[in-house]
Length: 226
Image 1 (spheres, rainbow, N blue to C red):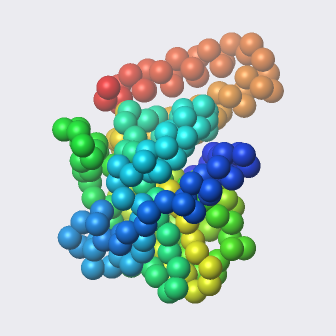
Image 2: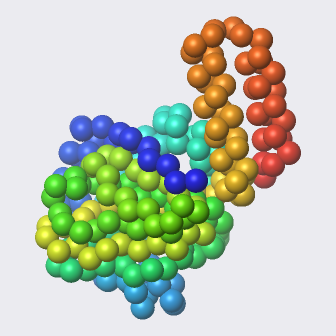
């Protein structure tokens, strides 16, 4: 499932984030790449654990915790602390797949990367190129979203970032371990959840909504790992 989550950060939070990013330290992005990814990766990142990354990461996690669309789609169990990258001057990230397991810096904890997330922190009018290209069931999908919007997609997907030929593409990226690791099952639960919400809006107190809610929770009970 590939899903856009609009307005994860509102205008005020976005302005605050961009000010912090403008003053942050940036280093070669290969520092956080795996062995194979490092061969294809050419960008800049804020170091993991940097105060700016922690501050902005906390802001993003708080926003996601209050976002019902994100919760319904991801069914998050754990979220890797958000990282931040920048592409400019022809930089790109060739076709790769994300590491299956990530060690949370400074802790003994690991997460399984079921879902990849990219949160755009600048608008598409600010740079040329830089499309996030994701290979999914329906072919290659090109993603270039407004500032504050985020895309979720299966971490098993092959993907790349096309060269940025003008301006700078600045994003946050991170991974989610879902309570339901299988993408197909998550998609079923998400569609069912949206259907129940629509039924409740259009026909409040309809008895079928109770039945469907029971089906949702019984499936979640069977499939969830908590």
